[in-house]
Image 1: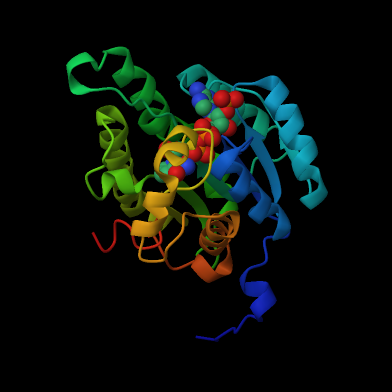
Image 2: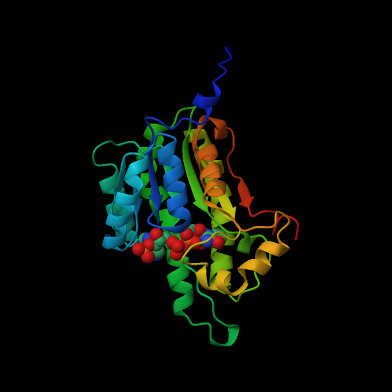
Length: 263
Ligand SMILES: NC(=O)c1ccc[n+]([C@@H]2O[C@H](COP(=O)([O-])OP(=O)(O)OC[C@H]3O[C@@H](n4cnc5c(N)ncnc54)[C@H](OP(=O)(O)O)[C@@H]3O)[C@@H](O)[C@H]2O)c1
């Protein structure tokens, strides 16, 4: 068989690719959206808040072709509606990043029922619903040489035991890691890879209270001595989405400065 060596630029090039990043209006989703845009992909971002969508679209447009579509992805019908809109102009999607997520932090004694449904619907069911609805478009995009990519944003809270009482969160993320492996096996032969990224602490609205309270201690305890930054998340996302990452599937990649990997 012929052997084709890509150039360095080709290896990380996403020009011509179409991507959807859920929760791309802020935090980790915005870091990922920016990275994909800078690599040349056309990106759709989505979140519930229409105003946040419009602002993020404007902010990200300096990096490339971006469109924001509001949707509540904790609902099955909304996942299907978004999928229809994303594929309306081209029945093809190269990269799906399931990033939108919710955290509920409350002591065991008072941890409410609602903290299960809210968190599991968005963190676990929604990535499944989006893969299901976008499957024809992912199949249409992927080839044996250059598969379509699904990237699920898990968490190191599912790799080690988190310090905070976030029962539904850490278990929803553990389930998402397992769903990643299950789907990887089934979809590999269909030229779709499925991987997860398990972030450590990154600055975001979700992490603001924790980082205000103990950010310095968390950074000091990390082998790499800091919390995550934009480039760390953009880098792993572009790697997984590009030629460079074409032979990975079913992996869970911790991006945590060594916090959980050396615990
Ligand atoms: N930051 C960290 O340290 C860290 C660590 C490990 C894992 N993670 C994971 O990384 C992902 C992003 O987290 P983040 O820290 O960037 O949080 P964030 O700042 O709270 O961002 C969450 C994003 O998801 C959107 N979202 C929330 N509920 C939604 C819904 N029902 N439907 C559609 N979109 C919704 C939010 O926009 P709207 O509010 O407008 O809907 C926002 O764009 C999550 O899966 C999180 O679990 C984060």
